Length: 352
Image (tube, rainbow, N blue to C red; front, side, top):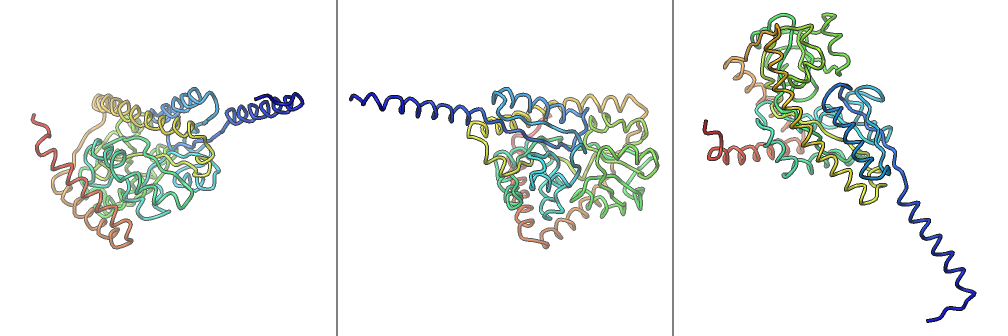
């Protein structure tokens, strides 16, 4: 087919405009801010920086995410609303921190006698219903939810003066995250619970405004320098055996990404999840030994204390079930998954 010669320049111009438009679309740069809960020297923040670098590399600079350590733009529970209104495009925190948005966030994270192992919680959220359930809570606020990483069993309580049992916590001031963990600890012990962010914890302990501190795992506590101002520990953290951190992503910002950028982001998040979970647990093992080699005196909860924790946990969970239908369904789904998991490991558990 021959085209009239006078049409050829028009066709060439249209092709040039089309290629330019495609090139411009491909080179659109999405600049995001990611506010973390973590301090700059923590492994989870350092791995966030690596994740952002990898996303930048894989996207040829088209998705440029800048992480910010704890409190630089916004802090604590305020991260949720900041993601929702796009003050920031991404946030990184803990599900129980968002309990002011909906009661069910308090039971989304691990509570006492919840999933006792990392793999059970990871299966529930990565292969089971967990992530879909979390998104039912987050999406009405314009937020996409993803699991971030699993610290697993937290450390316990660090204090200047010895705490030997729940009775010793009566009317003591304890730093602990909000939601189900703090509610159960308060119910079981009669302590006052205070949800301080990382930058506030050590100064409050040094000033005598706190009697005991819960802060993530052994490595997290060591990196925060809590061993310098408290040499007594009661372990383990009954209130959060398989705790997980989470990512919040602004829904509109996510929708603006091309399909390949979405795939890069999702893949990078999963890589972060696995890498950070395993590296952090390896550091926890080393940090526990450092605590043991220091002046820290360890005490463990008694059987009577564990029974009191169990009773308090059951009462609190019953209140959540009565509070709203979603919380009831979430608790029951988690308990059903745990029962299925435990049944399997009756046969394939540890034989040592």
